[in-house]
Structure formats: C-alpha cells, structure tokens
Image (cartoon, rainbow, N blue to C red; front, top):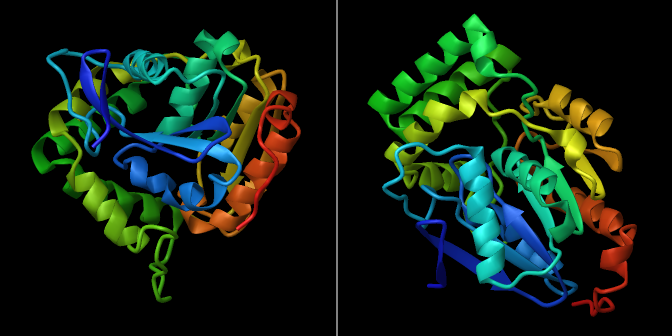
Length: 289
C-alpha cells in the first residue's frame, strides 16, 4: 500500500490517471474511498490523488498532543511536497473543503484552483459564544465515551430531527466504483476513525479562524439542495470573501454531494476546470471511454 511520511504521520494515498493533478480531501469521519466515484470517471483527463487525513482510514496518528486545522494544512503541504505535485486543484468536502480553503489562503502560489462542497467557515473564535462552547464540550464528551461511530449515529439522529428529515424508504443505491451503499460505507469508514486523534482536534479547533479573503485562486463553491444539505451560510461567506469565486448547486444532493449525485458533481467540476486557463492549457485532450 502506498504510504509516505508527512509531518510526523504515516499517510496513506492513492494516485490514478494522468493529466493535471486533482487532490481530493475527504470529509470528517470518512476516508479516501469517498472519492471513488470521481476516480472512476475523471482519470481519463486528470490525475486523481486521494489520501486519508491523519487519524482516518489507513493513516495513523502521532505523539502530538494537540492538532488543529493548521496541522491538517501542514500535513497536506508535506504530502504535496513528498509526491512532487505541482500546482494541483484541491477538491474538498466539508472538513476537506475547510482544509482546502485554509491551504489556499496560506499557499496560493502553489495551487491552480479550489473546489469545495459545503465547507464550514468560522470568522471568529468559538470561545466568544457561550452556547457554542457548551455544545462543543458536549460533543467532546459524547465522542470520548461513545466512540466515533456511536457518536456519529447519535449526532446524525439529532441532525435529522433538527432539519425535520424523514428516514427514506427508497432502496439504497450503491456508490459508483465502490460496491457499497452510502450507509455501509459511512459505517465502515467512521469505525476506523482514531478516537484519540479526533479528541486532540476537538481540543483546539474551536478557536481556529478562517481567512477566506486571502484565497486568491479561482474557487468553485458547491452546495446541495437536499434536506440534509447544510453549511449554506458558510458557502455565501466564501463567495462574498473570495475575489474569484462562483457558487453552484448540485441538485438532489445532501451533504455527501459527490456520492448523492456524482454525475452532476462531475459535470460542475469539469465545467469549472474548463474555464480555468492553467488547467485547460495543460490537461491532455479528452480520450473518452
């Protein structure tokens, strides 16, 4: 299995295809397999690089006592350096999108573009809000005592009640290229999360401040229109703050947009990249299947 040492952790990664590099960053609790639908369809024209963020999937943790989004950004920088990836497009979902935006704010000269799906944004410390501080303490307590998977199930239940989402009675569909339903995949991925690494992050991430106004590369901000789609206020902030940003909606998609409607996600990504000169002029001509 391909691994590389990055910022003190043993990071698992995969590379597929040829062309301009797209680096995919998964959401919290998930792993590199989240992007299998895109690996299946985009690698005729691009190189797709997926990896497991520290404490997720096949990537372990470290002796570091506290980690933050700055740690995740440093991990990504070390990965790109180790793999000799030049001017990639970062594609991230939720937590992965936040990592992508933070990396772009710190290292804009190393990137071509950013694509994010329902990435959270925080412009002021969580410590300024007593209710959010209390909620964060509850979250950490539940994670500590129940573990990642049972904590995920509990908070998913609360999220459905908050958004008034009914349980679907439709036949679950399999994730393209993975051979698992979304529920099967999420259950398997979340069970692999390192509890201690997640607790390290919960200690310090609350006061992490984002600086989207410092992102100078072309940016595509995506959201879904499904009942379990969220972070729309954050998407509006990103479009307002980033000088060269556009926003699009993936129809019929919840918070897992690249899985819920992979065809529309791929189309939006391709159309955006076709408009980015640095990608359009360096990618090989489409080969088709």
